[in-house]
Image 1 (cartoon, rainbow, N blue to C red):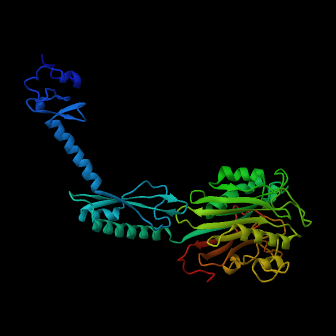
Image 2 (cartoon, rainbow, N blue to C red; image 1 turned 180 degrees about the vertical axis):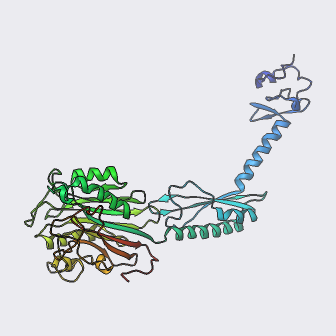
Image 3 (spheres, one colour; image 1 turned 90 degrees about the horizontal axis):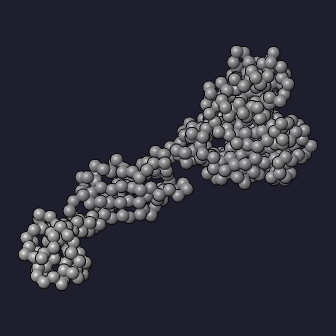
Length: 442
């Protein structure tokens, strides 16, 4: 008696069957996947008799296999051996380059690029698909290669365009000082002026000096900047030199704080007879769009002594931490006038300890036409500089082919007749990257 048509028959049991059913095949087996199309057709063995298919299902399996083989033949993947500097932003997913689509469709194939990011270099993988029945040819690969290289080069050039960066040095006048509110000197009144000044000018980097914990907490809450930097000693009594930066555009690569002393790695540390504990903070920041890097130092020298020793130490640290391709910035309240030997050492004019500075800098404010005074010693907060005013606040930079000085200014903003601090606020605008034009330092 024949087995039901919709059942799966064991090979050994089927082999022992006395006679095949009338509608099975010559081997007496039923199709494993019965359907109307299997009726009346021959059933064939597959895989040593473990499974049985009729000719119809066998043809479907063969067709699917042929399609899979054809897809494999029509797809070629090659890896570019030339690295391109950030042609594709790392946050973007694998993408089909729009400028290649029409070209590829016209020539009967398409291509896509999978970015492989490695630090600051991308290694694209080019995959080419044939859109017709024929396989991918060497001509298709050559054409796709040329299109991909051209497109990535254009993207790379667009991302490498020079960009502007504002740097602002801001001695906040510590809130620990007992300045009266009657003359606009208390921090409770000045804090809102400081916030408005920052929001008005929108710098990329702010180097603050004399920053107390109360002032740092206010800036964290009220302005949209990330920051880092340690106190020179216990924060209840000593200042914090901090670097605030726009984290939407800049990424902090590395940075730290060191003391202005003979043991810079130890904090706190005092040396050279200085009245207060002093420190410097530095960081390397990468522009998320262009990949350009700025190496920023911020410090506060003592009021009277140790200027030359601090200048030598800071110059040594700049040489140690900043790289040749970085845009270098040194800013801060250096409590020194231009004629002092420490300032002339930083600009490479004189020697200290028998040698020149390892990194020659120039005064960006003076070169930019804003080399005037920054501090009025009369203790007023009216934003007016009198005859006793001096230049204590500085922004230095290095002369190189990727740092262009575009603008310099000493901000004397007042709000309701009062200034945010007893120091004026130097600000410099740089164009970083190659290709900058109309530079003031050229």
